[in-house]
Image (tube, rainbow, N blue to C red; front, side, top):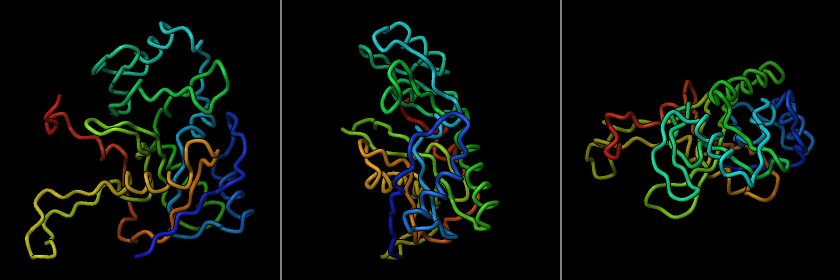
Length: 235
């Protein structure tokens, strides 16, 4: 299997109420890489939050206001260290500062996570089907840190038209041994791969991932990636 990752450039500024699907389709066509059936679109959370009017005013120098905003977007504070807060969001994700981001937004504003990124992904998928008469998969990505490992990577916070997790348990490895615990976070892997062409400083918020295994396509939800409390050894 060969996978191609195609950045969509020229998306431009996104404002509240913009139709993301229309913008993506036009951008892909304009650069000569029209979206095809079976493609997987990876869309950064930031432009989703902008389109869904999830930007709020905040004084970056007011640590108290920032803390209150984080707490309002959290169901549980997991850890605190200085200005850093690790919390569980309303969507079930455990991440730094409830996913609130001050980068790549106007001064004096903060971007909140979409209320339901799975729904956001479904909307883009449905809108593209209506416009282009093709089925694609959509992943909404965001940047997360990871316990026990330095650095950040992109993960899936919203999924539509593709499995978030591929369960390989019951299959056999190359030596014929049965796989007992192997579940692959396919949506996270695709999100991380797409970030390689989108970057953090290039203003490329969308990429087409082409050539993914057709067996991965179908129903999926980013909530499938959230480990249940009863299975978590560290809660």
